[in-house]
Structure formats: C-alpha cells, structure tokens
Length: 143
Image (spheres, one colour):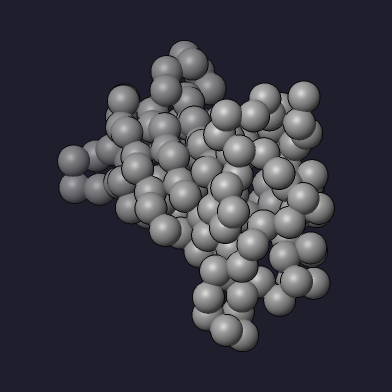
C-alpha cells in the first residue's frame, strides 16, 4: 500500500467546469460554496472513471470526508471555464489524501486548490475500514 514516504505515481483526472449564474454571489464572483461541490464532483467522477467506486461498493464501503483544506488564490466570474485536476496523493491504513487544483482555462490562473482526507468507512458498521492494496491499485501505481 502506498504510504506518504513511498514513491507513488497517481492516476490524474481532469474535468472542465463552467461558472454559471447560480454560482455567482452578492460580490459578483464565484461563491466558495460551489468549490466544495466541485471538489466532491471531480473526486466522485475520478473514482468512478478509475474503477474505485465499483470496488468500494463491492466492499460495502463509502468514502467520507474527515478533513478538508481549501486555499483560494484568485476569483472566478460568470462564464469562466475552470479546469479541475485531481489525484490521490497518498494512502494510509484507512485514509486517502486527495489533492485538487482548479484553474481558469483562459489565462491559467489557479482559482483554488484543496487537500482532502477521505476515510474509507464500512457502511453497515459505520466504522473505518482498511484500504486494500487492490483499492490503491485503482488510483495509481507504486514506482
């Protein structure tokens, strides 16, 4: 299993989002509530694309956020296309650390970045479950 000190090559996933009218706040820019939604959406889509979601369901588990840190670097505005990139940076016994970066397509400026600790939880017991090497293999490879 990949640990933080082990050389890990993550499977990177990219998706484009667009700032729409309902995402604009009273200050006429992208409301940070939507950044949390985008982090969840891109994380879910990445997991589905690489097969992690199917394995998670077979195991009777679900990923739950334990901790999330978001750094806002620039504002986004109505109509902006934002490229989101995500990858799983590391795994420990029950936690995966996922990073995301969202940047404006037109000028490459980073709008925000995040680091999220996701805990694998046994849905029936409501308790953390060990992340298997098979699960790790869906998100990248050890070098």
